[in-house]
Length: 344
Ligand code: SF4
Image 1 (cartoon, rainbow, N blue to C red):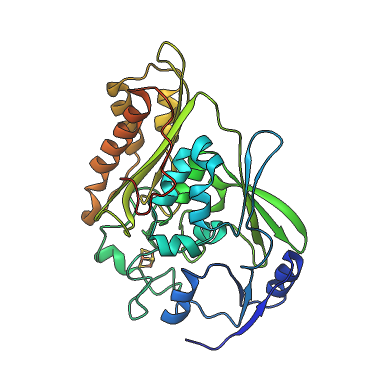
Image 2 (tube, protein in one colour):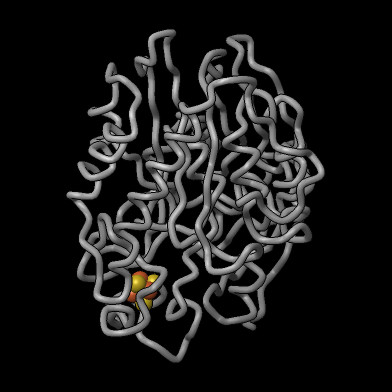
């Protein structure tokens, strides 16, 4: 590990000023990802500005009926929040399916969004990786591809974003609030993460010195149902092979008034299934319609040799989730607050 200075910020303004003043400074939240990177030599900041004690660990109701989630709210606290469980069950489920109970007790909302890929080569400093060392090459192109992208990859990087929480937040049309020395700005979550292109070292659109302070969720539709399903190699403490978050609002004659679908572990960013959504808006809910919508989305897929299985897997998961949300419309499915190791 390379040596670095450490300061604990007392205010948000103090934190952003400290990072902005040092070109290689980084914010430290829960540390569940960054500390690993310090140990592995992937991250080498000269200054760490600890933001974990800032007063950002609050979940607040917004006047419009939405919810503001502070950047420092721990994943386990957010999953257990009664308002999240009742109004945004997809988010609670996604959080509970991530990592382990111990990690969720430390990991924060902002840190979860900003976690980096778990591509094995990114984490192995003896291998070539354009994300870790721009211009060095991409070992995954001829290597282990089981966890890699089927949408939006480039010749420079085929990694995926590993978050479960971000997939649910994308489906819920969340907005990220950011503070810096020049003021505040809001970024739709759909625009926070980026595709790799020829700059795979840039995971997102944040500028140096910008601190995420909160994530806002719009009001949930009272008649909509949402859920999250994650497919993985083992029942807990595993990253997704594919995942799907969806929200569906049906009217009395089974017509889809509103549908939102987001997919995880298939691209460098959480992937919004716009093609599928476009086909389903105003359609009658049916298994055949869901299959056609999933197929339409997957027309854009470009799997690698080692992850072609993700195409039928994502198709089946998307169809299953949409059926779950429309087949037995009854009381909304509220995740258990004492659920510890994921629901699927
Ligand atoms: Fe690095 Fe991306 Fe290639 Fe993985 S897929 S080795 S993160 S450049």
